[in-house]
Image (cartoon, rainbow, N blue to C red; front, top):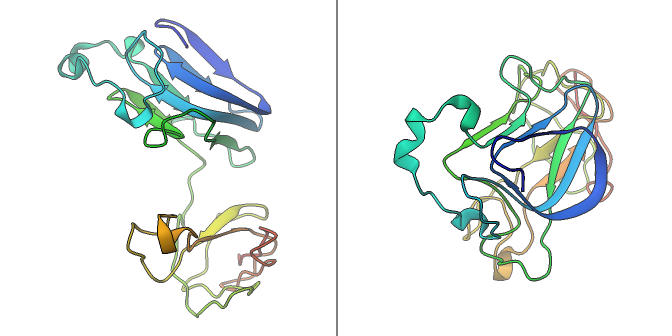
Length: 208
């Protein structure tokens, strides 16, 4: 637990998985290097009792929030609007299910009526449409428009073209176990035609 009135500055890349981090004070990520936090459950809430209830966390005292000084709000800060995480660095929060956790609540990053700021380097294009069909295993995509601000090594997601029964493009029960998205890493950029490796390897190329 990060106690009330306490600020913890996170500035490492660690593969160790922490089961639970409960932020009652402030957890702030540094901006001048790559960081990685692996955690089962990360909650930002105004409670001194540690709990693994994730999305079912308490919302007590929500009506008192407007009168609470900014300095007293439980806060998760990964960059700010004025000072986002620079483009040359990555701040990753990876969630893991650990044995014994309540599957309805974890893994999760849950903010219970408190403050959570996640600000990466601004992009002129956060997303764009495809301008041609993509077949399984294709290493090159044709985009509807040329993108700027995308860099080699950036990761992109190509979403599925059909929505399954149990919600958007994420895994679900039964026939929906496999998500329809493919995550790729940009290897090259050339106008509106990105190219990359096969989905199994996780790397791809994108146009500049």
